[in-house]
Image (cartoon, rainbow, N blue to C red; front, side, top):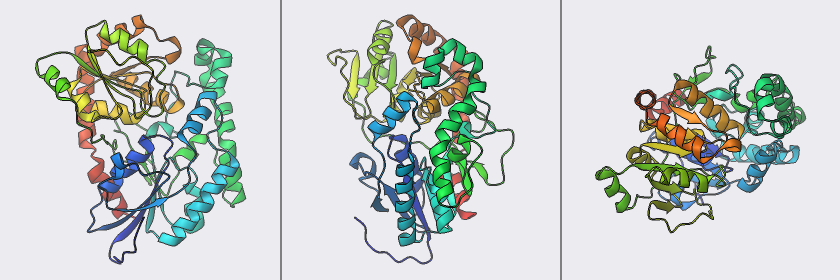
Length: 405
């Protein structure tokens, strides 16, 4: 899969992607793509290399083990820690071997939470790409995430006491990571969010005005949203509908969202006379596909779909949210996991989108949200964020960050 190359004058960068969701692959892929071949020797480790992402890439590729997306989603759904001790131990052993083989100048990881251990053991700088809402200094959102504790207490009670039950949830999820850190002689962290954000350098893939932290540490930097669109053109019919003024909505529940809400979303928007572009992120969906108002695609150029749409409906994950906001379009987010709730809470607080709980979703709630999404105030807030995203261009900021290492 890879051949030997000798470029002693180049900075050698090793990327690790955690292929449990599409976003945790495409984000490091986009960062790798922005490094100029004359200055960097790029190596990329991932459990799978799908052609629709990697086909034209020229960096060296290495297969590694990751848990399956299905197992990841299952753990999320039941509120179980995402990784167990044996899995994390396997990650560390494999990462250390690969780092020793490649001898990189720097390692870059996206949601590969074992890398803080592996890079310490290998004495190589680690750049951790994450979102600022995971910082221990970021305030917790008022909306409780999907978790079995929330289901036991009920949404209303959990919302009132979320800040008090969070330490319990965080401690439970941090236990496997701290156990593995202890095995390899690394000190445990005080908070689950430290596992998510610690690195020799931490790059927050967000606009700072959306998720402002009280203060940045000396090793932290906002690199801006890292954007990616599938190289899949929109059908001419959808582009022509936009050209003649028909109202469009781009709907994508992503690779980590549930498609259980799709039939309800589609009905609510159809009843408002919208035409829909629905991306399934490669997953099979049982909803009817015989509707002339709905165009189904496994993958789509999401940036173009968002640009042509009045607003975007998604699972609230940062990849789809920032894709919409970069095009100046407000977002209806229907999150199911903690990360998605955190992202949408900040977007809603800013005024550029609306968070609807998947537990209480119904046609009336969706249609009421639509009228607010189309308001001039929310449209203006989304446009404002699009300018902020353009001002924090990861393609410029990320290479500058690497030069400082």
